[in-house]
Image (cartoon, rainbow, N blue to C red; front, side, top):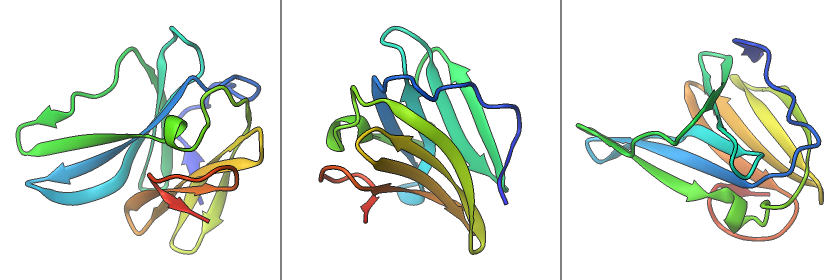
Length: 140
């Protein structure tokens, strides 16, 4: 069961301007394919930095994306908003759900597209369901 560290901001009804997923590598090996999800709902506003750790959803607002390279750690970004046609779509709802051995945070967009951060056994991945086609996360 997922719990929020702090109450998440009210983003339902906002329009997606960007949605990125950050993967984390250590010494060239993939550690977490969905380390952090970055959501921007205002063209010039802050980024929403969202991640799950030990069953806790951390949702923070930050002014900039993370630094992609830090010593032996390396981060890559995939533009889910562009790949899956989410830019310009309205964010309808944000929910959490239990899954075996973990939980997931679900962002439901207009057009019946759901982007989930699924955290199972200490690792996260993004699942995109419904809507158009593309790459960057599993599609069902």
